[in-house]
Image 1 (spheres, rainbow, N blue to C red):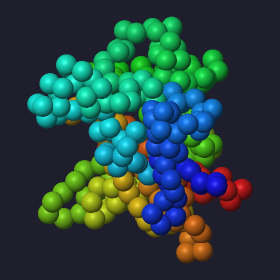
Image 2: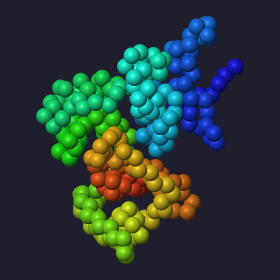
Image 3: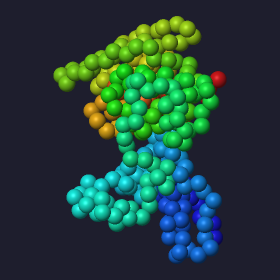
Length: 284
């Protein structure tokens, strides 16, 4: 009998069977499933899960088996004590078996290209020289803004480049202000056809003002259908990952946009422009 499986259990309504759970069940409990196996490389499960979540904008719930953020986390004292004495007490699967690692500070602003490339290989990325150079430049920019760089930060940086679509509009500068008694405002400068176009707008909140200013520049009105913000790693200076769904026109399906930045509002602007670029690319 065939079973339809998807990464992270994605699917219509309540979703499909989660491929990662089935694969790891067969591997971990092989004695209970005599003769059943898969040829799936299990160390690619976690990187694949993260890539799918980045592309779709649908994060697996923290307590999701195998790939959830809490799958290998232990906070209670009795759990920590058990882990120190015998890891198999609470973990019959090792994080390394699915290609996941504990968050750790591994690289910094003084790290070189060779060390960065080696880290990419360890994280399961296979990039050409041009892609490595682009990722390394973004990594250095991040190091100037963020004190601690975690593996998830690097994964997010590289994944954002992998899924990037042709940039018709590129953000050059953003200034935004919020106000709890009145309207927030935003001013943005965007590069289009080698020209810098600037606009400003008021809005019901900072993000709304930013999106309206972008609409004024593009002359395309977008309707925000969904807006999600999440932290890539831990700490006050964690990278903000924003995913939006925007419909440009009543008869058009919504387009997904992704934004990544230390500043949540800049990440929001990047996500909105990403959705706009996807829409314009499809119209060509």
